[in-house]
Length: 249
Image (spheres, rainbow, N blue to C red):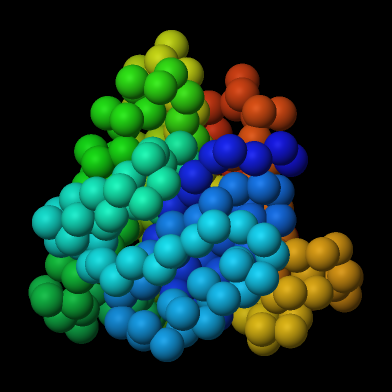
């Protein structure tokens, strides 16, 4: 969708899920990539090689996005290599799990909310100054389908998940009108149940070859993210776009 000359930073891009597919899709559309990973250098390097094989410039950066010093260092490394960061995809999320509210450990809840909320704030704080100077920017968060109106109580579904995702949606809607006059759009994609893909499946899907039906795949989410990052979505901001998959709306 015409992202040539743009530099995109994708958090949580060192694994086998949405982050990888989003990075591959933005590279397919012409962007150079900064791939963030928290733990696995090996997986980060594997995904880096996939991007470079597509003819795009890329770098992998280890950073815990719940630590502001790590986020600052990651942006500094990206700017040193590429000169700027035009697009941020806030994909990494918390380690949520189904539990009754009385069983949720305080440390677990803090970790989830740090991953979902504090990390979003840190990324915005690091990204917006440069985007404002250039008069162009895209910030896309991965939220959660129906997180704003959660109807599934424990033990059927986690409580930490919708709490964090709903906060991302709130930040999206609140900050979007402030940044829009500066040429920056802020949006979110809210997926429902999403299956995983192998490396070969992800590569096939990014090139348009995938089987229909079933739950969302990471590619279904990545295609929506890519649209929001493009000039075709220049007038779209403050949106939380549901991608429910097989779950009824």
